[in-house]
Length: 304
Ligand SMILES: C[S@@+](CC[C@H](N)C(=O)[O-])C[C@H]1O[C@@H](n2cnc3c(N)ncnc32)[C@H](O)[C@@H]1O
Image 1: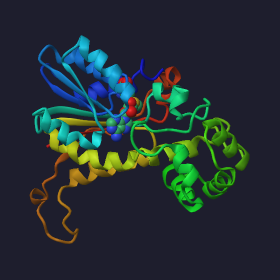
Image 2 (image 1 turned 120 degrees about the horizontal axis):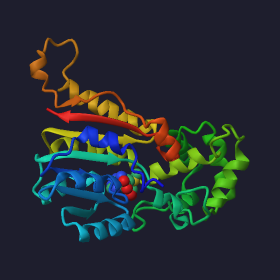
Image 3 (image 1 turned 120 degrees about the vertical axis):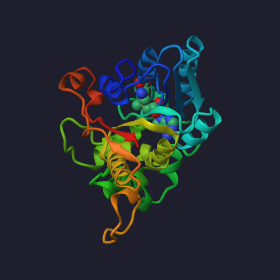
Image 4 (image 1 turned 60 degrees about the vertical axis):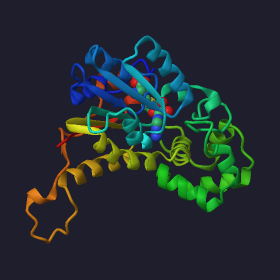
């Protein structure tokens, strides 16, 4: 299970190079797999600050923190990273910031959270079930065009229109099984290794949880909270995320956006990040051990 096998753990530790007494932000605490490994290295004077917007992750994190006061757990979206750092007096002093994006195994495996087409449960899909709109509320009220747009933009689903039309005809929907069976009937099975509803579920989840907006907002904040020489490590699980991370690192490594034809010396461009290595993918052994690691991509950069 993913929580017992934090994705790309060895690679994350090599990237962040945690040091004794260091301060690290784990922006996606989950069940604390990466955070626990960091705590093992940072020694008695180190600190790991874990953020999560899922109340169940926060409860599990607080349990860990009771046993280890070097772990600080905050119920927060990572789009409030800078505010969290300000409140803890760590802005500009952080040694490493980690994002392990997406959903956790406990979220996927709990039928009542409604994330999985493999388990029947209420159509919810909110990481924080106390806020925002559930998948059922949205699917039962959005227009067909809006549903098709979301499936296309956030799932890159080639049959977005056909699925959106089937959803609107079948409303009201209330369970994950209703949605997954409906998609299965609406579209031909394309890939043997992928359920036909995979992209539909992914798209609705990303849209409802504003996952791409959260990431776009948090990356510049990570740069603010890091000290010079501190490192950013981001694990993405699909190309929509990875594209944004790659572009952010590239733009910050290039510096201020002067028009290309202006004769501006390199020193005036003020690059803020240095990419560290290329994109890192899990080993064959890790994927065999943990199939969910299959699509993971780690990118690393150092603050200048
Ligand atoms: C892949 S899991 C992290 C697993 C964790 N690294 C571990 O080793 O247990 C992602 C976690 O990030 C949380 N999450 C996703 N987006 C978030 C956001 N914008 N703000 C805060 N937490 C978020 C999810 O609730 C989930 O618990």
